[in-house]
Amino acid sequence: MTEEQEAELEEQADDVDEEVSEDAADEAEGLQEGDFVELEYTAYTTEDEQLVDTTDPEVAEEEGVDEQGQEFKPRTIVLGEGHIFEGVEEAIIGSEPGDSGTVTIAAEDAFGEYDPDDVQTVSAEKIDEDDRYPGANVTIEGEQGYISTIIGGRARVDFNHPLAGEDVEYEYTVADEVDDREQQASGLFEMYLGMEPELWIETDEVEEEVPVEPDEDDEDAEPEFETETVEKETLYLEATPQMTMNQQWMMGKQQIGQDIIDKVGVDRVIVQEVIDGMGGMGMGGMMGGMGGMGGGDIEEALEDADVDADEIVDELEGAEE
View 1 (cartoon, helix red, strand yellow):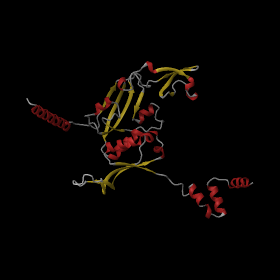
View 2 (cartoon, rainbow, N blue to C red):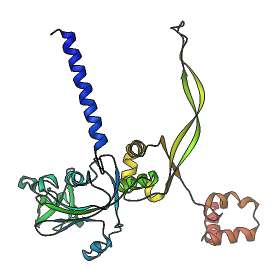
View 3 (cartoon, rainbow, N blue to C red):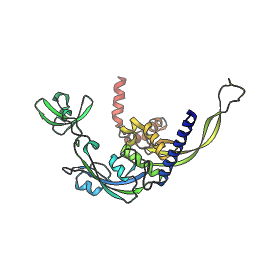
View 4 (cartoon, rainbow, N blue to C red):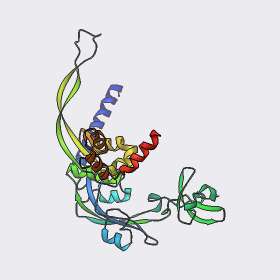
């Protein structure tokens, strides 16, 4: 057989494999990787039934974790993206909205096996005085751990995850498949930042500089551009002060925005920062407007701003002396 014939046979085999893969994808039923789902779940350690996580407000209340400022409700995740343990994802793939199940995640696939070598004795001087007690979370030389015991000037710090070595059992229900793209984006932001900002999707007309095809006869021609009006789907996002100061957002806004673009299918994300007024009495307006005020108006303005006019006069007179 010649090399050309071998190459032709390999190409035919590749075509057959591709067709089989496409047919299998078409025949796949139920939820698949890349689908957004709204998930309800509760997870406990199997040995001592310690709560790991839940979306159920009643369970949160029973376990006494409902006052931690967290909202307990179904969560939106993307299958196949590692937003929940792989074993749970595998159980959900192929299922339908409304299906329920129970999955046990082995310790090695959950929070890791317990490693005794990750327990170290350190000087208490390396720990802030307010954190020198058993159970305190501490950071030593860039590593996070918790104090298991502390005696005198020495502390035993455990750098294992608090749930290391524990198998975890998940009870879950696929509440619904999420098709609404604004809800998809909102769910992703909640997962990344722990909050759901106000957002909406609009289609905008945007002017862009696009390259012009060069003349084939002029190989040395400089690249040229022309302005073209194109439509772009834009996800608008209102940035609250809480979001602006969020560490995850400050450190990873570019990555989060790109992930939203890829998964939700919009062209761009625009973040709008809203600064609320102070009822028409901001400091700039107050100071800038004093030149046109009468004496009584100045006193009223200072009184409204909680400033003692007599103190200001005394300070000015003292400065002149």
